[in-house]
Amino acid sequence: NAGVTQTPKFQVLKTGQSMTLQCAQDMNHNSMYWYRQDPGMGLRLIYYSASEGTTDKGEVPNGYNVSRLNKREFSLRLESAAPSQTSVYFCASDWTGEETQYFGPGTRLLVL
Amino acid sequence: QQQVKQSPQSLIVQKGGISIINCAYENTAFDYFPWYQQFPGKGPALLIAIRPDVSEKKEGRFTISFNKSAKQFSLHIMDSQPGDSATYFCAASGGSQGNLIFGKGTKLSVKP
Image 1 (spheres, rainbow over the protein chains, first blue to last red):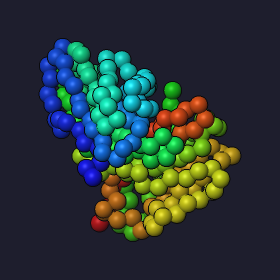
Image 2: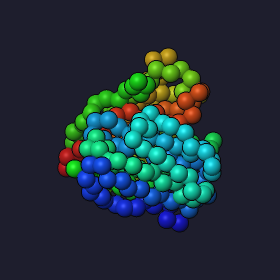
Image 3: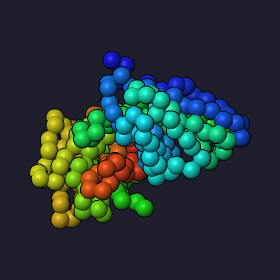
């Protein structure tokens, strides 16, 4: 099992550009999450999906959109990137009710 | 709002010493308290977790101590090793807050 995979590993964008971060899990989990990690700020939840076909906002959703493409895949889209979105983005997944979240390796995003 | 407060931000310990990281929470409905370990360039991974029906949980050199009345829990790493050098996050969930709320993290450095 690969667990949770994320692409790309690293990306540089110019302000105003758009991009989609991809996440996939092969553990048959029903819940998936997107977090951002900034120095001194911990992990902040951007969006989550409790099941295929549903998505909900987390703590910091502004400037982002998500799509739960199927049970395996959950993508995060930046429509018009801003320097404030420079961060490390983590995708995670779990079984609802089991509470242990499994994280991917992260995507480092730099917005110039 | 900062529902889980973690301290210290950084910690330097000598090899063989005891590392102690503290967290405090506000929401009395929280009923699940995990600790995640993150090595540089990697995603966080579950280290150990506790529920409020016990005051202590031990797994190898890692122990969680839980004080329900004080709304505090802590991670103790006995016989700290250089390989324990990582960032540690406490978290909490429960009640109407189904998602994990993370502390801001503690960067631990164990000196040989």
